Figure 1 (cartoon, one colour):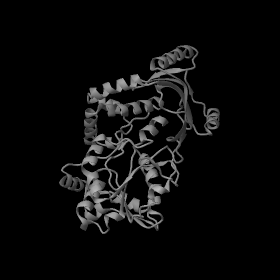
Figure 2 (cartoon, helix red, strand yellow):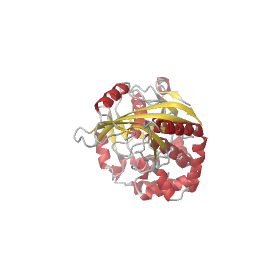
Figure 3 (cartoon, helix red, strand yellow):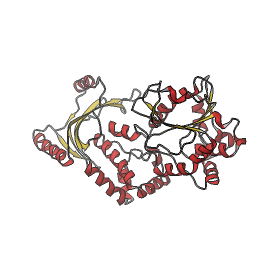
Figure 4 (cartoon, one colour):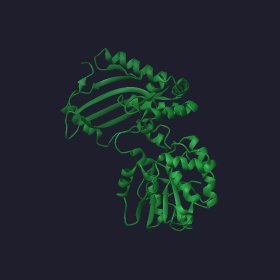
Length: 411
């Protein structure tokens, strides 16, 4: 079922839980859940006082669904544990829960709704970008936290509750940071740290109970999953087993690169380059097929690049305007870009550039060497990104153009 979070009737027959487990579907939180089910001495509450909540980004691995549905959900159902599966229905969610849907609310769950509603992938391609691997994991904050927080507030009904997180013994700093969000009602708890369990201990326990692990839970395009060589090898093996998933990831990166050539899914490096180096022909061929089938658009991209407040020689932030000028087939859009290139390059207006990813951009304004500066270019890419700009962007652009003329395309 799909129920609006604002519909409080979904909760009227259930008491407020004393314990809330945020279940990320991965090895750590799954080990906690299984131990609670198998070993009553591991907990100091009754299972009818527990609610398990899981936020669906819409981009979980199918293998995770298979393992959880076969091995974990039946155990939850047998114990009568309440499982709430929730998701965002749109990009922005209010604190009151508007924009959140409950995908399933059951004490006898049989299905994992990993498809979500408004997916993180939807958000990324609509914005023409990729998840950022630096700083805070804002993709997780928005796709999970924004959905979980209002639902937890509603089910706990203003009563004190213990919020259990799956941080393992090597993640004490994450637990300390999380405890900073405690309130008079919410108290964070971290059983794996109390038990002294590291990730390997959690995996070993899960395997001892269900005979297998549930695998690493992550979005199929998570940049943190590419953090090191061994992790990349695991993801690449998953892509090899399901090339369509890898192809969709490459499509997202391809769009982001067309709109900003500095982007790259693997810590600034391009995923497609790594897949080519590993000769992942199945994934690359699938990507070529997906790309060829996509409607395309001619995008007009303007960027204002501002300096850091503490170091004016380095980029601090960028404001971007993306506008779709026309749509059609890839061939039609490429032909228009070629015509523009020939006509306006002859007048010294546009400069053509072919990026390392093979995409073509026509620059009307090149960024200058000193911040603040601006740049403007036209590019052809899949027609997935939406028009987007801050309400004040045109005003900022006019001021930046007058104050800091960019290096002209003809220069």
